[in-house]
Image (cartoon, rainbow, N blue to C red; front, side):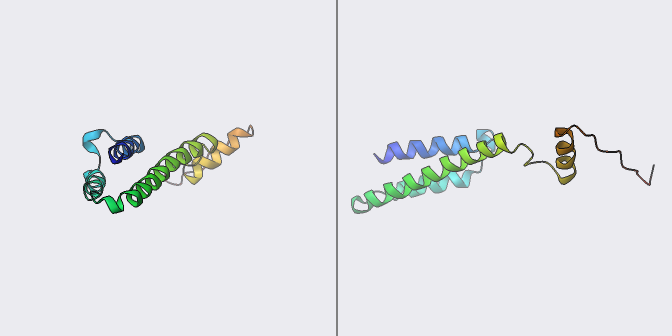
Length: 103
């Protein structure tokens, strides 16, 4: 059963990153691998599996939150100036061109 949770965690880590596999941070995978390697004691197995299921749920929720944020708030990753221009365009206005003193 631990192997099943481990595979789910590895898949979720792969889904969470946008970098190619070779460019990913190796520490995250090695830390999870070490946690699962230390989980060999049967008395802690139930608690460990519960903790890893919580971590998995957290990673899935974060991925879903990010997708919803990008879908319903498309201006989230714009600068303040770009956000103002996009808002003005949304209501049918164009921002005036600002004067650049050096030109």
